[in-house]
Image (cartoon, rainbow, N blue to C red; front, side, top):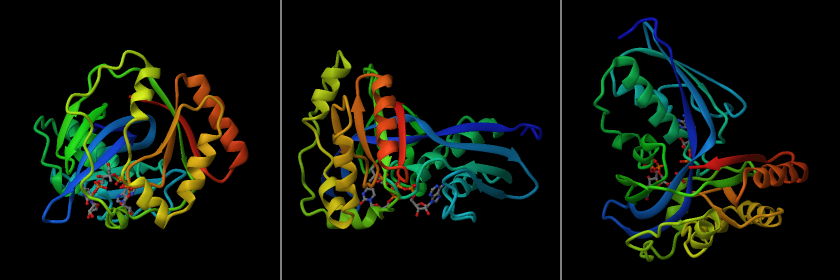
Length: 278
Ligand SMILES: C[C@@](CO)(OP(=O)(O)O)[C@H](O)COP(=O)(O)OP(=O)(O)OC[C@H]1O[C@@H](n2ccc(N)nc2=O)[C@H](O)[C@@H]1O
Ligand SMILES: Nc1ncnc2c1ncn2[C@@H]1O[C@H](COP(=O)(O)OP(=O)(O)O)[C@@H](O)[C@H]1O
């Protein structure tokens, strides 16, 4: 390992454009069929070799994020067994359905692989169901409980506003509140979308099966969807993951940025970000 080396890596927000829950395994985990994409907003991580493991959590969303070994970046670094100093700059809200912890863990794995020169990535199953797709960092179809990931070729450009009122949501409780566990998957073969408009029209025919149970436990999600729906030029709104972050889709970056400015004016205390999804 190069002792002087410092590795900086971006941990993008994960967005579930679709999230179909298609079954449940005997161990309680749910089978999913999800179109997962990544935003150009996210956390930032710096990893450097050190005498002992050390974690510093900074940034606008650092409050409440664990600073001990339970942080997923520490668990990810432990897979390599070399002591490191990690600085985690949190910009994504936690427990928000945009995989902040999972994306941080995946980014840490990639940083440690670079630092140690170890090309073989470790098994990340123990870090969480979402970490595998976060290692890909590109539009993917995710199936199984998250272990079956295949990249989506040629996704049209897509722009979004992400919004979160600040309320945290527990993923297990949303899965528990889901009444029907056996919902239809996405089509076996996904279409080849030629334009952003065609892509959004198709997405509108798909679902997030966790949206209704999440709203039941967290009514603020309905308020978020309503506010996003009222924005100028908006084409589709939906919740990501198990919530509470919701997204509004747009055809251009300018439209997304204009809409984000409108929502920030209306709701200065919400987390609101315009971004590109890919
Ligand atoms: C729902 C999703 C959709 O992308 O996103 P988030 O809302 O967390 O962002 C993920 O599947 C979450 O993945 P992740 O957050 O890594 O899950 P884990 O830590 O492995 O599991 C947390 C809990 O979620 C439930 N869980 C998770 C994944 C899955 N396929 N079935 C489940 O039932 C289980 O109750 C589990 O105990
Ligand atoms: N690096 C991290 N960033 C955020 N949360 C983390 C991190 N490591 C561990 N956690 C814990 O993981 C849980 C889920 O957070 P997160 O992954 O952001 O949510 P979600 O799975 O809804 O996208 C929280 O309880 C948080 O305390």
